[in-house]
Image (tube, rainbow, N blue to C red; front, side, top):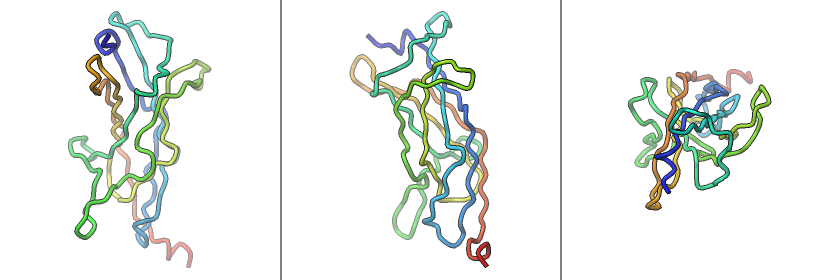
Length: 161
């Protein structure tokens, strides 16, 4: 049974990350998002009634990627010499976790506690919720983008002087 036909999925970025400062001296330095991104999944039936049962199936995942500030261009790779390297560092995929929200209501959440970025500029994080369908293919079931995030270069050698 293809649950994507019966159920509607909606994502909400409920913990807004702040883009970290970018170390101009060491491009390899990890700057974590603080607080880390936290995304909540809402599930409703075809009549718009919210389903209380959270997803426990680990085959459903949420993927995080980096996009331009207008949300039109994928910014996940950068050119470093003759090779392309990833811009986001850390776990880019999260499995669903059952936990309570700030009001004590149980919900299905995805977290990215070790996510960091290697470039400065204005960006958005895009979260893509995926899961299996009847024919054993993976389908995109919902997507959401964060607000615009902005990082700034700072010189660590000057800060320690």
